[in-house]
Length: 174
Image 1 (spheres, rainbow, N blue to C red):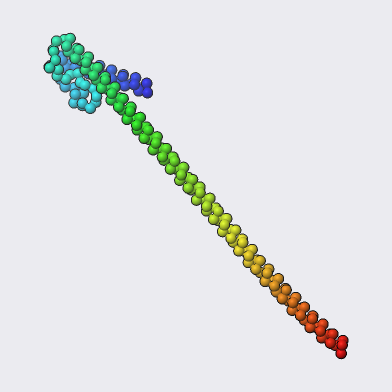
Image 2 (tube, rainbow, N blue to C red):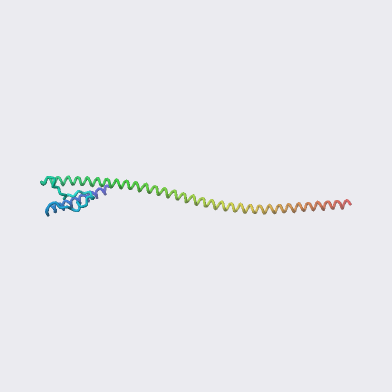
């Protein structure tokens, strides 16, 4: 910041010196002439060659008027620099808050992406477990059917044994 102010002061001093040289050349060549500075009033520097006929034209009066104009010019430049720095400060605050918003938005998007991936992984695990449970259920059903078939065969075998047993008893008794 200090370096910027120093650079600004150097530019201002060199601009004032150049304007004074032009003014002194203009006075030698034929009175008050307009410089480029007067044609560009937005530059913030009040031209020194402006027609000052409404003021006293003695040597001291002109010099004091130039000094007053220099002081006014310096004050105007300082005010403009303060406004520019204030605008830059506001801009920096705006950029910072915008960056914060973008970072928080990016963090939210990243969190959403992570949650979506986690949900997809859990859905895949659920599908695998469902398939395993279904396969187990099918295997259990087959085993149950096999066991029921074995029990049915055993019952049929027991019934046949009882029938043979009854026939044998009748044969023994006869």
